[in-house]
Length: 121
Image 1: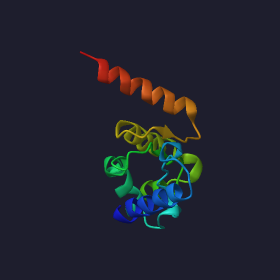
Image 2 (image 1 turned 180 degrees about the vertical axis):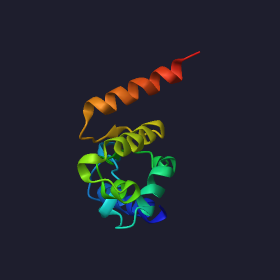
Image 3 (image 1 turned 90 degrees about the horizontal axis):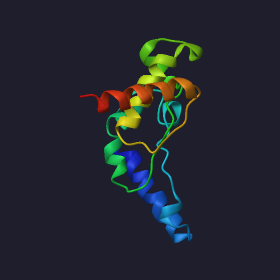
């Protein structure tokens, strides 16, 4: 996770030096093979999204059907819907501003249920 945070700090500084306003940036920590063949780095990023939010930029999280979910569940790409939804709901709960998904309906339903639970008495 520290490697990802350091990467973003460097890139944000480089972008600012190039004249790109920080307010025009969104951070995408990458998931799956982008981070590693091992699922551990993707899981660490998801677990600690709050620490990346300390960089004061919106986060875009894309876990949809990623390899690390297959490594955890043993499921083929087309069978990773439940694992995808679980990881997306976690990212949303952790404060991700944007979620990239393949199954918009499932994510919308999951978020609706999450909001209903949060609002229940």
